[in-house]
Image (cartoon, rainbow, N blue to C red; front, side, top):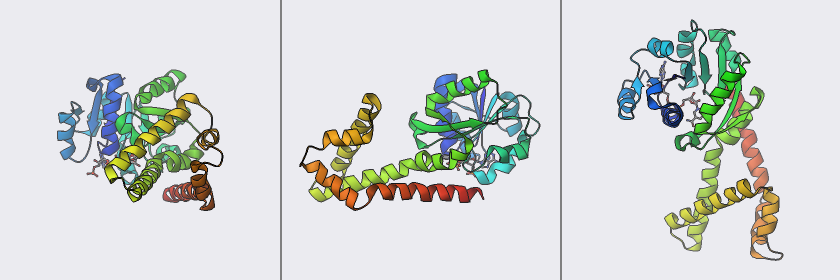
Length: 261
Ligand SMILES: NC(=O)c1ccc[n+]([C@@H]2O[C@H](COP(=O)([O-])OP(=O)(O)OC[C@H]3O[C@@H](n4cnc5c(N)ncnc54)[C@H](OP(=O)(O)O)[C@@H]3O)[C@@H](O)[C@H]2O)c1
């Protein structure tokens, strides 16, 4: 399957690199209106199409990785396509929006990725407009899985997914920074505290992922009766830590919904 990526910015580059591990760089062509991106493409071994039409004609799967404000400009070029799979990663642009521009007969896939794609550990939501064959769906999933984990969800849940997984890394970075600063307050230098926190985070996530169970069971295991950990947990509960997180996701989801208009 030949892949064409329109928009070779942060996400376009991240996807090109991880997808190439599955399909090979020779099967990926990229296009961007910014001529400076040609150099980046060439340095990384990707063919850079000099016009969008060439990319469209020579690709089976066309990924749209431009900002939502540039969507219309790109989509109008896809109206005449036949039998291509159009995959959009644009936040806030629904399948309905895309169908309105290019026609409901097209095979349209919508994916909401996060920044983790840059290291092959993205978290992605996927849905489509029901025009793909089962074989095509499986093929797309098989390719995307190279970039991280994939969750097939209904489109109305995309805004909440955007908050939880799309913006999620920023919230996790806030959490990490807060703990690292707490380490500094205790007397570690920031670099050392940061490493300790990152390793603690990776270890905790691994425990949950590999050994299963839910976080509450693990909290109970870590907290010995009358011990130190439960003191910290009590403080978090008093300050409404989980309520703050729920509020944060609620606000972010609301904003995602508003952006769509
Ligand atoms: N970044 C994230 O973490 C993230 C997460 C989830 C989803 N997304 C979605 O991914 C998409 C891309 O985001 P990004 O952060 O990669 O943006 P970006 O770095 O700005 O990359 C977009 C690229 O597309 C180019 N472009 C603009 N109009 C074009 C056109 N008509 N034809 C071809 N190329 C065009 C831009 O060039 P100029 O700079 O010259 O305009 C830019 O190089 C967005 O729709 C965003 O909603 C991003």
